[in-house]
Length: 327
Image 1 (cartoon, rainbow, N blue to C red):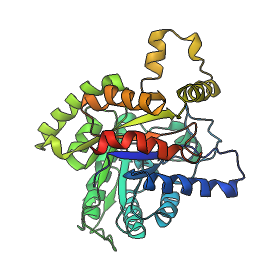
Image 2 (spheres, rainbow, N blue to C red; image 1 turned 30 degrees about the vertical axis):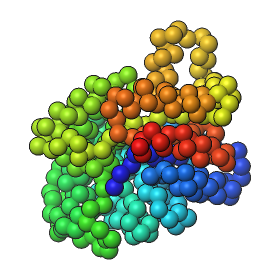
Image 3 (cartoon, helix red, strand yellow; image 1 turned 90 degrees about the vertical axis):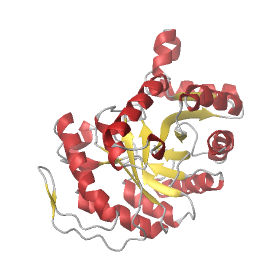
Image 4 (cartoon, helix red, strand yellow; image 1 turned 180 degrees about the horizontal axis):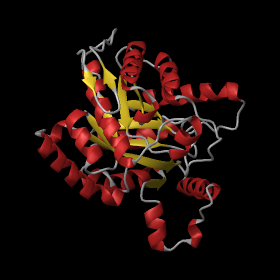
């Protein structure tokens, strides 16, 4: 498994009848595959997230969507970025992602995190608990899921979960990869050092040197060679052949969320847009290289919230960023 360039589909608000929504999702996945992306991701949420849209905007259930994407593609890996552990029993999740692996012919990745969106939990009846609770649950879940993905039959009796000689058949392989996503330098990075093939770092670009130092410490504590844990950075890309058009797309996207960059100080603008990469292909490539890759991150997972659903934009992003990460 290697994910040097991933494409996340974070929204489904394409101003079309709902019956036309999923063909647009498939078109993006196929375009990403043709453009050399290593993986395609959807979010594991039931409501749209703050900062992207309103809660009642369209949001598809992740694993149903991923299975459909898998049957419409041939080589690209498929994953959630990331599965909220609180939404599923861990043994059921192991079964679900193993089934996705069978459906896709061995292309599934289990992206997983502790869960954080309280509104979903509150309104849909999922137990939210404290920050400490959610990470304790994730730790227990991984002690069940990882063995089940690797062909073992775990027995586990914890505070949150229990299994007894848990079976997981069929499986295509015994090394289905786990991707951890998050920003926590102690808990998330520690779990990644113990269980994951890949860590997707959720942070501002300016924080990356510190994040990577912390990750190296967690790997050392776990007795793991840091070079065996691949890393990526989640990036919000606004790209167009016309850089001015890309900047206007970015401005309009922020305005839709009630943010007017022209009213902010330079410091506020920098903090707000530190994960945003905006402009022409050359401008975006330069920003990504200097702000992300030069810090030591291995790869990128990008979304194209403003225009990714428009034909040709995913291909443009792949053509722009692929050479930076694939060498």
